[in-house]
Amino acid sequence: MYAALNSPQQLTKWSGTAGDPCGESWKGITCSGSKVTEIKISGLQLSGNTGYLLKSLSSLTTFDISNNNLGNQIPYDLPPNLQRLNLAGNGFSGGLPYSISLMPSLKYLNVSHNQIQGQLNDMFGSLSALSTLDLSFNGITGDLPQSLHSLTSMTDMSLQNNQFTGTIDVLANLPLENLNVENNHFSGWIPQQLKDINLQMGGNSWSSGAAPPPPPGTPPASRPNRNHKSGGNSGSSHGGGDGSKSGIGAGGVVGIIISILVVGGIAAFFIIKRRSRKQSMDIEKPEKQPFAPFASQEVQGAYVYICALILLSESMSEAILSRLLLSSQELDYLTD
Image (tube, rainbow, N blue to C red; front, side, top):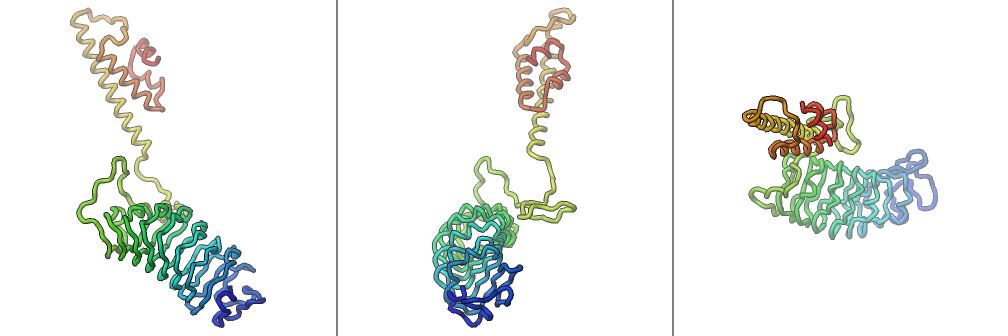
């Protein structure tokens, strides 16, 4: 790297032939034991490039070469285990290298104030730890890639001063706190979920008026839970939630609905059965008659209704049937 950077004097104690960057405290180098973990050489007016052996720096977690004059392409084989990558202000052109998509530990990515062109690839699917993304002041075009919805830890995103098109719907369910999309070619409506964050959106072609209703079956809009300070419980490490439970789950709602339907069906059954018996008493003696299964279509419909409801609930069993106050003959017939 030192040789590829034209052996600059600003990098004191560096050497292109021999030496120990950890033991000799090379400028901008931080080590853990004998392993180089950080390289911070920002704003030193460096020129040239960073060489082609960066991938071998497997212990490197921070790589900051921002605000230099390194131009041309971004290094394509970046260190694989980075948590912080700052390439801002170097005049880099071309696109983002594929190696960025292979950094599952990456939390901070800044490539702003360069000359990056073209569309973004679908490269964010494995970057769930990424919380800060700055792509501002470049020439990036096209729609936002769908893989951005995988950035489940994202809180700060800067996309301003590019040439992005399309909508920002893919960002709606991210746990964003700050979003800047100014001075692009975005269109459509602002998602409801993004209206309660620090949103800067001027210089685009947003649609006016009320947004159209969501397609049938779309869940209601809601903001991701960003509260990590629950009493005694800690949330997930990547901003998924606070580990607390509130409200009634989907299973509980289904159970309540089925219970209401069952009670209604039972009530309907007894009303119909009583009405049928009352009519029979006007004709016959009020003695207990032998059971005749499904004496009328009304009673038959009530039985079928109750059977269907019982089959819907896995928790209902023959023991529950026995509580319907049916005769033994009716119970046996219904159970069968």
